[in-house]
Image (cartoon, rainbow, N blue to C red; front, side):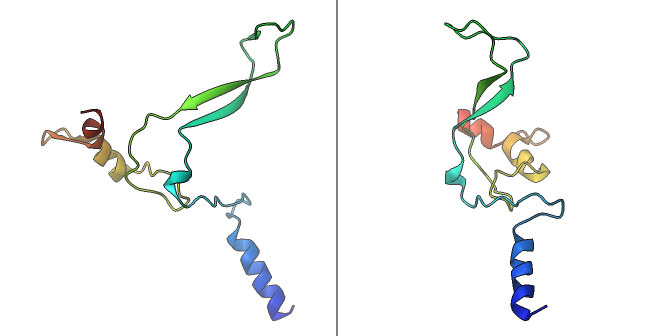
Amino acid sequence: MSELADNEDLDNNDLYNIDGKKKSERKEVNELPAEKKFKILNHENYLPDGKKKAPKCVEMNIKGLGWPVLEVSATGLPSVDGPTLKRLIGDSKNLKSGEIYKFYK
């Protein structure tokens, strides 16, 4: 194999995780939408107005809580590890409020 081909393989490996899934490329918190739409199976057999047959999938909107992002993980998503969650909720033993309390104050 040539040296150029070896470098191409290294570049391709940087794009994928060990399990073969592509790595996330999001790097900025500003890219996170306030609301996200998902398509889910219509288990409830919801029938939209004007339709005669229930669709197989329906859209579901999930809206964020609006909390501040304290830390960002390596993928660019908000971090939810232990120390970050403790900063959000505060310390009940010392009666110190967290960032969530400040947000709703």
